[in-house]
Amino acid sequence: MSEIDTFREQTRQWLGANCPMSMRWSSKGNDAFGEGLAWGGSKEKHANPDVQRWMSAMAERGWTAPTWPREYGGGGLSKPEAKVLAEEMRRLRCKPPLIGFGLTMIGPLLLQYGSEEQKKRFLPEIVRGQVRWCQGYSEPGAGSDLAGVQTRGVREGDQWIVNGQKVWTSYADKADWMFLLVRTEPDKPKHEGISFMLMDMDQPGVSVRPILLISGSSPFCETFLEDARVQSDHVVGGVGNGWTMAKALLGHERSMISEAFNESEEKNELVQAARKHLGVDESGRVRDAAVRDRIAQLTMDKTCLELTLRRTKEAAKLGHQPGPESSIFKYYATELNKDRTAALVGILGPQGLGWEGEGFAEDELGAVRSFLRARGNSIEGGTSEVQLNIIAKRVLGLPD
View 1 (tube, helix red, strand yellow):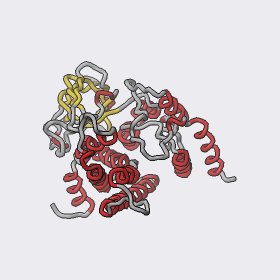
View 2: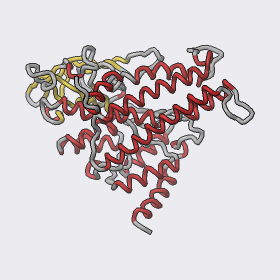
View 3: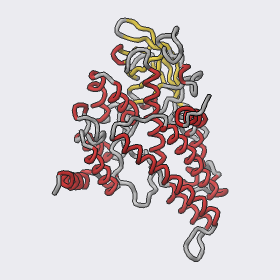
View 4: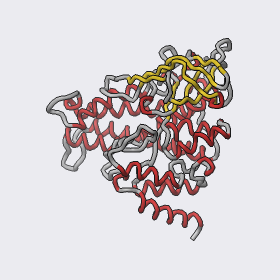
């Protein structure tokens, strides 16, 4: 038996013995991604103790971040070993032991650009799920024009004193730390006067206020900074290099967003809803041919996205970092999610328009909220219009 075969057998046995049944995806494919999973951090509470148990077991082996170096708490797995782990987790339908911006955004950025001290300070805590991160990019006057951020940082000894406001800060009310863009050199051109900082949220001068969306709930917050303090050695990439850090991290974010929508089980959901609300013919097919065509098209579109993302993952294993192509993934995935949720509401008909009260099932009420929430997906991480501009300039090479 080869070494990789031995690793596969050992991994299979370990996962089978250590992954609780409640931490495995339903065979019916009706789980909501992100529900009942560990995000980590000091503020997290779980009704199901298996969530923490599963995360802790995987973190002990470094398998919450299997390819990160062992010296930073990761699993240190080779590319073939990481592939085996992913395959065996899929085979057993294991849920991710840990999710969040630490693993998908700031962690990869620190591995790429962080100092050795920053890597040793922050990465092990991310792997163990001890810290939850949020992103401080957008401001009331700087969203699509991100380089226009006005949050100011003034150096005072070995600290930066930060004042300003961030908006659409996802999960800021649940986060322990924030990575944020701060204008530290106001006299320089706007792209050159920004620094990328790591800030402790648990300090005087940091206040958070949730933002309620039309969908009825929201992960978004406003974050107000009044003389908040950031240690000088918590600037990543050097003072004034924040725009380079921002672009690199946005590549990870857009890839993460497209990956999240790729996890959904829209075919099963749409087919089940169509069979229930539209009926089936004598052969067992959904009765409405136009709906069958739409579901088939959405399924093919998702398959195209899945295969393209898989190619990108393979490239990443060879050292390729996300570039402007991540804008393609982000645009395609979020627009596809809008189409999917619109299709579901259309299939449900009047039952897809309920907001509350009797006469509507829980999944029907969820459909209209998902439809409304999907509109925000094409804004967060850079609007679809911004993504199209990036694709035109940096991928297709079209003139301004």
